[in-house]
Each structure stands twice: as C-alpha cells, then as structure tokens.
Length: 202
Image 1 (cartoon, rainbow, N blue to C red):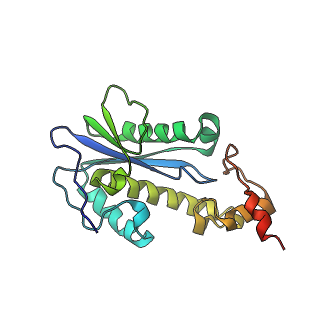
Image 2 (cartoon, helix red, strand yellow):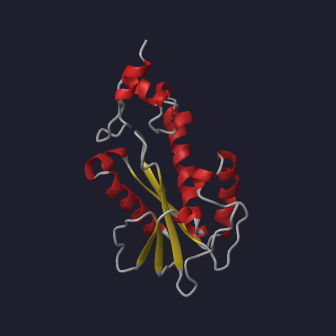
Image 3 (cartoon, one colour):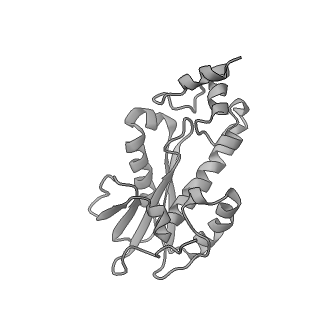
C-alpha cells in the first residue's frame, strides 16, 4: 500500500475534510475535519473505502490520539431534501469545521468542489482521501460515525437491513423500500426505487 503524504504543504496549519454517505438513499450525510501534526505517520491509514470495517475501527482511536484537533458534523435527511445533497455535504463539512477547537489556515477537501468557509482558503483534491493523511483520517472518522448512526437506526427499521447496507442503494435495500415503503429516514429527493427491480420479480 503506497504511503500517503502527511499534508499538502507545511507552512500553514492544514485541516483535512471529507464526508460519508453522500450517495446513500437513507440517513444523514456526515463529515469530519482533522488536523494532524506535521510529518505525522499513521500506519495503514488510507481512503476509508479501501479499508475493512475492522481496519477503520482500529484506526479511529489512533487518529484521535495523534490528531491536534478533530470534529464531526452532519446534515439530516430533511436538510438534504431541502437544500440538495451537494449543499448538504458542504454544510456538514462547515459544521465539522465550526466545532474544531484549534485554529487552521488552509482547508484541504476531498473532491472537486467546496463552498468557501469564512475567509479561510481551501483546496479541492480529487481522490484526496487516497493521497493525504489528514483527508484519509477525516474519511475514516466520518465513515465510522455514520455507520454507527445507521446501525442505531436499523434497530427501529430492520426491514431495510441498514445494519449491512448502511443506507446505500443495494438491491436488498430497494426491495425493502418497495415492500414496506420509505420511512422518515429516506431521502425523498432521491430515486428510491430502480427500474431494475422489475428484472428480479417472480
């Protein structure tokens, strides 16, 4: 596994941001912001999508222990439907940044778009969670936080099996929506049912 750079630059205090759950059919979108010390090393840290659940959970306390500062923010399903998922992702990141108890001078964001946060400069990095440790750390914290939320929601809505699919649009999840209808945690602005379901009917 190639090693990730600890940061984009070394002169400014840099915070990495990433989100989890943008493409889901249900549940909030969750973002995290992480400030790591310069020349930080965290063995095994990578884009959360390239890690197993066990690896992500093992890395979380290490990230929190080594971080100078970290925070998590989210946008609810209702907010996603009101302002769209892109703006909700930006808002979740802003809320994470709002909660940081350390000053920062540059925001490094995974992806190709971001909404300006106050007067602090930012840089967008496509696939940044696979290039920079601070973004990768944010991706892991956001993913773990959201997964825990979806597991809790599963207890009241087991028919969608969020324990397994975490709200993503798997065939099983879509079949659950078709059979039981959407619930309060589904994103009404999303296409919840797929025409492909017709291929799997008896």
